[in-house]
Amino acid sequence: MVVAWIIVAGASLYGALGLAVALGFVTVGLLRAMPHAGPMTWGARLLVLPGATVLWPLILRRWIAGGTAP
Figure: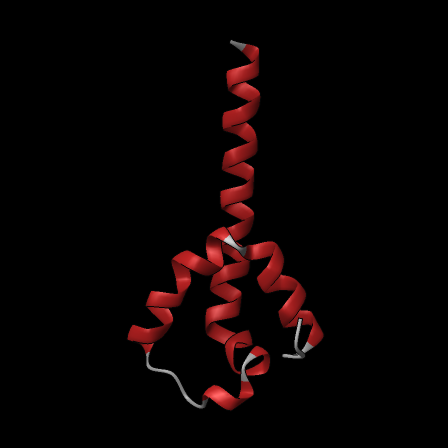
């Protein structure tokens, strides 16, 4: 039972951090990470949000790097 609680707590923490990073990325950092993409509509940003939530460590690294190739 303790192992299940640890897994759920870890997944919840990962999701919460991911959502925080993704919201910041979608509202502010998207143009910094992908300057060649141009302006994006809020509908397009909404489509990017779930992927950015799940892949937040990669998104955060690319956002900090400023859009350089991985």
